[in-house]
Image (cartoon, rainbow, N blue to C red; front, top):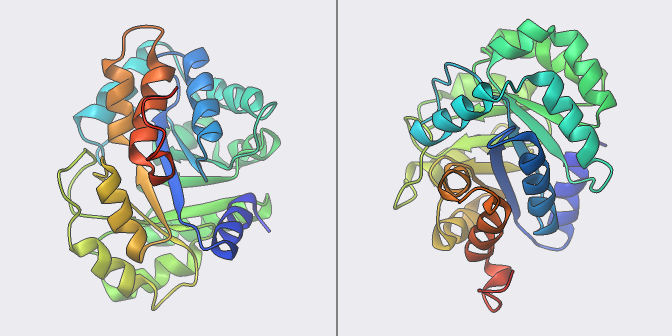
Length: 269
């Protein structure tokens, strides 16, 4: 059983719902990234999505695009990210998923990367632009090393594709709440709940909803019908706004404001 599956099984047993934060690796630098990941684990993240910086992140809005640019200017590549995870693993076992476009993975060498990722104790990959039939091969390689392939579905995904995507996925399925790119929104689209309902016809995997979640109310709404909520742009925006050296504190404050379990302890650090 993968670490991601174990985490969701534990959540289910106690009737809980998952929190999955996203951050871009190396933004603003590797040491700060390490401390942010550890802080997210300390705050109770169930899975952490670690973004691989890429020069042309088509599915990402301006906030995450800028974070990729900052990391790339710092010279961050996959080797650095693997080293980062190795260091994090000295202190936490919270599941970590590499969130990436195909290009950086192929440049590194996909099979070599899967082997190195398994050694670094990464738990899965989410490949945003892996087409259906390509995903079959990637899923096979990942499962051979005990890693999960997390797949994206969207409100525009037809039933036939939902079935194919579900068949190649493991760990959990990431349901995109709306069409378009990432970025914090004031409301959660009603299409998200419809998509989760449709997806449950094809998979027993946990379903996480993301794209645009930025408030406690939105997370609680998603938790009514999905197994986990993903928050990315809102966290990345806090990192961007924070003064140098205060990024971890900014992330801590934001996450405490987002999660219901901290409702009676706001303002503490």
